[in-house]
Amino acid sequence: MNSSLLKGADYVLTGLRWLPRAGLRGFVAIPLLINTLLFGAGVWWSFDQFQHWDQMVQSWLPGWLSWLHWLLWPIFVLTVLVIVFYTFSVVANLIAAPFNSLLAERVEKLARSERSSRPDAGLSWKDLILSPLAELSKLLYFIGWAIPVLILSFIPVINVAAPVLWALFSAWMLALEYADYPLGNRGLSFRQQRQLLRQHWPLTLGFGGATLVLTLIPIVNFLAMPAAVIGATLMWVKEAPE
Image 1 (tube, rainbow, N blue to C red):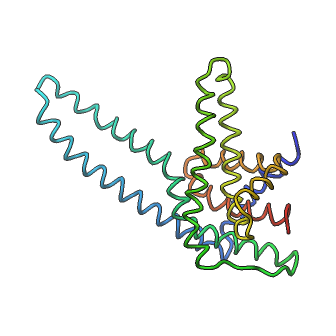
Image 2: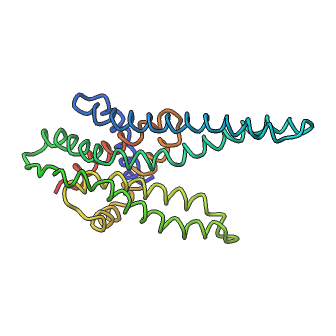
Image 3: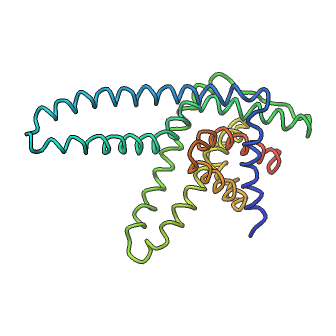
């Protein structure tokens, strides 16, 4: 196995180990708390509305079909879980974008304090305000590539390789997502970031693959985003110091 793949994966684990560090906890806890409160409020509202809707359905159903009422709740709960699973990371990235930029800047300062005296450019308020817009542009880029992969998944013979294609696609996108914070802080455009990641593709896929695994583990996936931001920052400070 390419050593760069393992090296890239190890940066994600290093990011997890850095989470409790003093000076970083606020950047991790605040966006997680905001996102959890928003989703908690959304789930509570959904259950409240569903109870009213369920009561109306019961009043409409004839007595001999009343048993259908008991099928609605499992379907509703499953729907809520699927929506939360697939939208949590998207919404979390939008909400946490300014915090992630600050987190990456803080991690880079800590990492460079022992390596060099390179001056820090620092983030402006304009950068922080526009960071959610940058997230939307990345989302459009991801969707643009997801559509061809989805089409290939339905083509006979080729679709046998669909799980591998989706895994590689997800690893690349996650690596690109979290590299944007440290590299964007340095002024690299999205196109320049993609060029840099392609030059270090084994490292990139190792990092993205490990991040993907974290996002699939219940409970741990709540920590995947800040750990990936920290890991990506440490990785590019060492692998692309200038």
